[in-house]
Image (cartoon, rainbow, N blue to C red; front, side, top):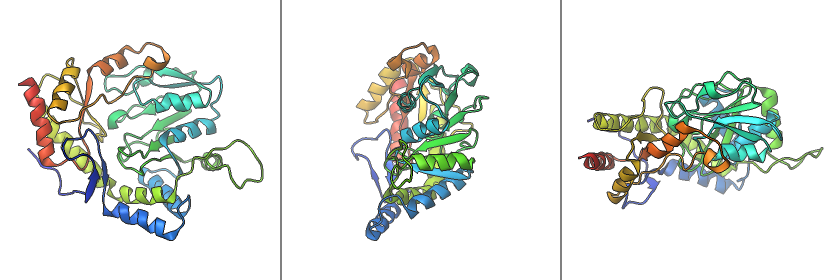
Length: 344
């Protein structure tokens, strides 16, 4: 069995007595970056944010990046610039983070919940052509098919660094603590449209304007951006780590009576397996010192109504195993052994 590359950060935020489901991977570079900004005394949005925007946009292949304080704010701002408001219908997956319906409701619009395809991403063919906008998520890091719609918001929060981010009129990401890279909290919009970028920048900050209109307090700080710049430099190594761990899992679990993820076009934000006995497996792993979870806490139609039978099936059967850059070889072996004991 192959081992992970020789890379380990100086410290990580997780409890040593258990194998965490996910963990923030931080090191001395992030500490130095934050300290540099703090010592400068210029901690709000400034030169670090601008540099971070430019570097992230170049990394994914977009012309413009607009940093904000969360992925949900990025979604809300994207919908606002697209003039999606009261009475509009926004197609989106039910089997996804609640941030999608939250941002849609914040705009006074109606979430139009769609069911999942076999890879757990939204079924692009289920998205109606007459909706006002569509949000597509590359769930768990697996590249999704984008719908043929003129106003697609591509959510790359779980696939940042993969072959995603350039398909819709705008793409957004989150830099939450346990995402593929982090600024603690934070998010960003990406676009090639200069007018879109200018409007988003104008709306994220309400101060120092000659004319009043309702705007937001959505700014990212330079402290966050400095941490993000350090994380971005290490992201390629992070992704190699994830691919290596996923390959080890796949080799070890092949032949066991559950469904493994398709490895094609996948950056493995999550390693999700599916089986009818998911609750029993999760309980067994927890008792073995391994934190495993439902990868989506609840499908959105459980909150606001509707029927999405494939999302229900995924919710019943899916369990997410630990996968993150700081997961060591001994911990990987513990996860593998615990899974085998369950089926043994």
